[in-house]
Amino acid sequence: MTKHVVITGANRGIGLNLCQQYLAKGYQVTAVVRTPSNELKALDVTVISNIDVANAADIATLENQLHGHKIDLLINNAGIFHNESMAEMDFDTINQQITVNAVAPIRVTHALIHSLGVDAKVAMITSRMGSIADNGSGGYIGYRMSKAALNAASVSLAHELKGKKIAVGLFHPGFVQTQMVNFAGDISAEESAQRLAQRIDELNLSNSGGFWHSNGETLPW
Image (tube, rainbow, N blue to C red; front, side, top):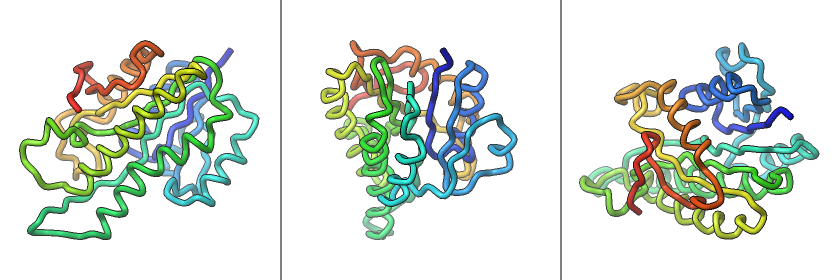
């Protein structure tokens, strides 16, 4: 039976490449975006457009559109990135990052939980910048806060969903050459997506709630 993956933030970068990875693996792919790119439109995927993951009404629309469709894998990939420091502070972007990066993945997962069956998986695309132990430079206050909050919530989800036999994994994609970081990364979005797909394959109930680099390294909290 064909497996079904739902990927948020799928119009470009890591999300687009994850769509390509899972198409190659034979999955039915549903891409959730605000506005689809031409690259996404060219793929043999189902596109659900006009979805802002931070908007409750949009997530209700997404839930309705996917009602009755079994989901084997949910990849919460949509996110935003800003840099605040004590010298350059912007509380609006801090709040925006917490809403999009931390609250929205939980909102999406909650909305689609009834479509996630036994042995389904939820992959949270987080960041090692959410690690408190790994913070050796400061800055990026809102982004770090949002990813630390996502990590905390995802571990709670892992505990709560284990009884439903749904595994939850937290994955750092690497420093990826995407528009989000002005293409300043050290690995391509394609390589990151390949690595992430491998890590997601390794996710199961026994390691649910773990926090991994896409290269397989276990990351500190």
